[in-house]
Image (cartoon, rainbow, N blue to C red; front, side, top):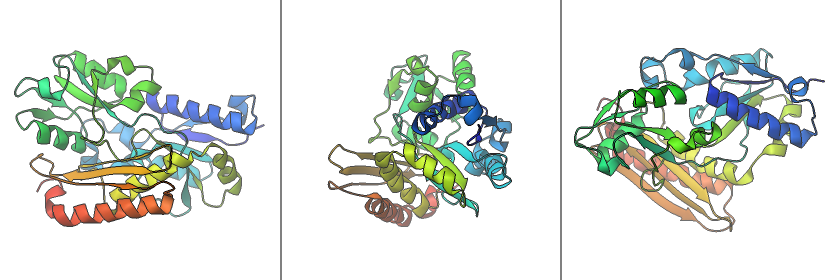
Length: 313
């Protein structure tokens, strides 16, 4: 008996993480036949088709969600699974952000054929990345390096690196782990010295706003700690009007006692300036507290950085 049709992108990483979510949801609902009860609809998005340029040049991060939103609204799927860092801060009318399951390691992985870390790269080495944030953070740390666009799924980018198209690249460590490819990481980037994309390592599930059954089911796999962390990070991003055109990094980490540590930054795309805030909340901090902290820091960074943090300035 079908309970929900689950939709997601068809990339190897999306398939791996969506199948993990399906298994979690099946266990919570007592489902035995995964394919019958929770069928998986693979959906090709505009972001999957555009591989020759950065996302901001093609329309921004909504390129990975538009077709999934359409499938939800026309009833072809009941639940959409996204990498949360790809989810815009504003959703279409009729769709709600319902759930974040347990978060994977949010750090960036540095991968190189010639150096153990970015500090050891030779002068003028080429770093390949499609992320404006990673470009800006790399150039802030090493202005002598060169950066070029390197797009594609995880396997494609690893293959391009092996072929010598760049001396180094960065990938989300969470994605490598979900694909069983964590052995490719040369080093892990300190996430407080160089914060990852907001919500990296977290997944998001969206549903139709009126689908109470799906909302109740997803509440069974909600991770309360991850929900608090991403509240701070998405508030920071939203206050900055964050998009793929703005180099933004943010990370909130919740401790066992309920305290929250946060760091967020925005940079000039050329790495020549960085605007940063750090702070903590005491034990018992909730979603509203986290969102207020992230929003306040985002507004402060926006006021300080101004036009410098927008691409092309």
